[in-house]
Length: 442
Ligand SMILES: [Zn+2]
Image (cartoon, rainbow, N blue to C red; front, side, top):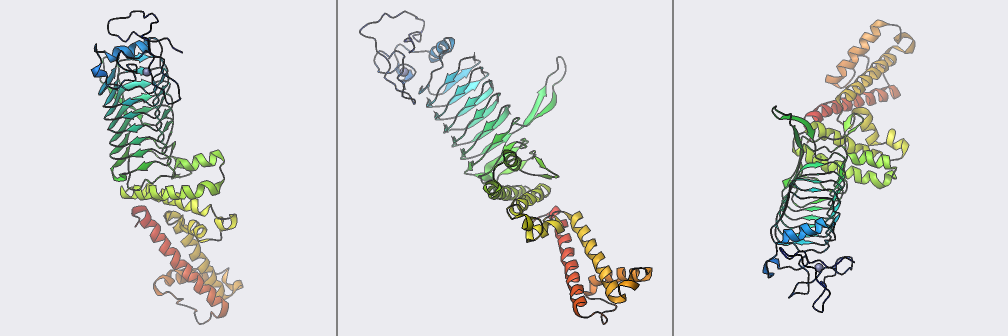
């Protein structure tokens, strides 16, 4: 139990002897503990748990009262009710602050502060704007299930973990600055304009002009947006954010804008960190592949809307890969439409692959035609027959049927020839589609 505090009385630090008038605050906090501070004269609560601080007589300098707690290293701030429109400015403290279930009835601003102990604001409410500028949270910040009723403006650095999971951002949310540790926005709800912005660090050299140096891409150690709910996705933007270690599954990003973001590389394509993460964690594929496919799909749609068709193509490949990998080995690799689509054209996204497959089919056709027309023995050694084969293959494009020797080819040989011609035409279509896919996807 803490000793009753009386230093909050402005300009007066009288030691109170135990007397019959001595009452403890009646407040019981979120973990069922009773407040150990002294109640106000005419109120059953202490100054920290009393809502109408402006009505206290004599008037209290509340910041003073808070500063006293910090000086004593008393960070038990659960259920505090802060004054309306409260500002914390230029405070450096090593106190571990547990302010779970606290309330800020008006706005709350933290400016130029440095917190060397961890801060826990879980389950709190801020009634109006929350602004955090030029501050540092060295041991991290937890604000789970927080209710941000007003705008949130965040330009600060969190060196430890930043955990906003299950929080509600009812109005505008604007995050820039740096999250040096992992950040969690898991299952958060964003109600209006939402912006995550990476910027550039200005490096100052003494006496010289500032140089724009190191790219600061917001999430230096990854983040998670799993299960996030954007109520107005058309108002959500990620600008210059490093998404190479950001998880985005179980959420709908359709309509969200991605501008200048950095995606992780999976082989030669851009993809989602969720894929790398799930593989690394060794989770059973049937659990994450369907979710991965859905994530690739909704993020691809979002990227297409910004006309970045190259990245959209890569995400389409990711989507198809997730679908194909859900099949058994033989079907995944050879005997299925996704497998064939992949082999023949890289899911309609790889023109080089489609062109090589087209050449291969033409070569088969040339050999087929030569053998069918001249017989196996005669065909192979003669340069002239090879020339005829090439000519024959080239000519099937405009006329769809063999120009020479059609009368001699009968039975199964004719069927094989027809199938090869269909294959060549189909492959030609795939090649054109894959070229178009690199430019625009319908
Ligand atoms: Zn109290």
